[in-house]
Image (tube, rainbow, N blue to C red; front, side, top):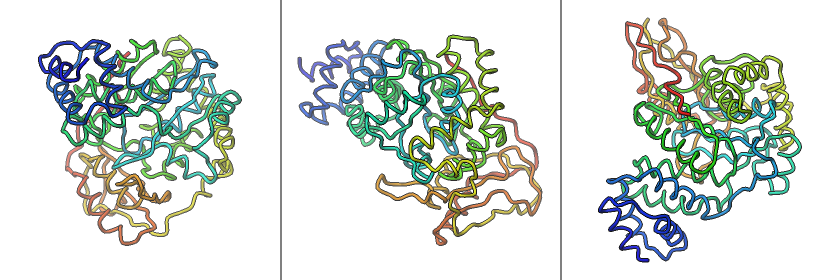
Length: 433
């Protein structure tokens, strides 16, 4: 078999065989296929797309290119939730303890933040003592004992995807739905969970800017999962405006705790509970109405909060910080952003607001950058809110005083004001099952 013939077949819009796709993935992973041939194939895929069968085969081949997690000892109760990335998106911190308190098994690998989007691992590490680097034995023992563990991704999980994504990033082939879908789902399949619910973000702060593109991606990923024997659903959620009120690592953990205590921002609670409902419905094979009632009870009864404390404690975290979030370190400097007139906030650019939080120290622009866990933004007003002159729109927090001016300018550039109340944007566009 020759790589030349595989490239030619895809160039001519022919369906690649299972053997051809597996040959490519193996050869590119071990280095026997050079970058220039891999980039030729990805460009052919970019222009001609892939069939459902091709995409499923590519995904599985990448999933099997490195380490995989065998969760078979937990039966079909293992569940996972994945977000395509957003600003203020701390839903894993809420969803995981809710579904674990209801008997689902969460054995999850999560990523760190990069660019304007935050990462679950960074948020968890803002809790004193929390350990995201468990050994395999520690990981499985904890899952067996309490039904939940969240760790950082293993270095050899889907090496084919790591190489291929780096190549696509510099050859203008990132924006291809089959390649995006196979990249995300290869990691989900390698992680081993039986039920997977996807949160596909849509809007200014997301990779997919329109509901139509988000739906196409969601449908592709759901098909991949189903073709590989998984229970699947995808919820298309809005990311034109940051989710919740807090942006930044410890600030987001504090907000998640508030939701688990029955308080907090309604938009965040709605999205988190919708995700949890889909997971419970699929995992337990019950109606969404039954699942929704179970989720609501897990919150109102305090079961989810107790599971969160148990989880944090088992992974070395200081559970006193959960009991009393005032224990989280505070940033040394803060600055209020004050409205200069009576008006409405007509729109927010979530990506630009995310970048503002990165400038404050809440994120990293390069993988090796250090994070200031206490840095971030608290939003007092959001899209659609009426503000009066003198109202505080948001407060910026940082330990780097010099960053405040630039971050404030970036934040203000992300907001548009109007004299009229803007049209409401739905929090959830659609659910793909």
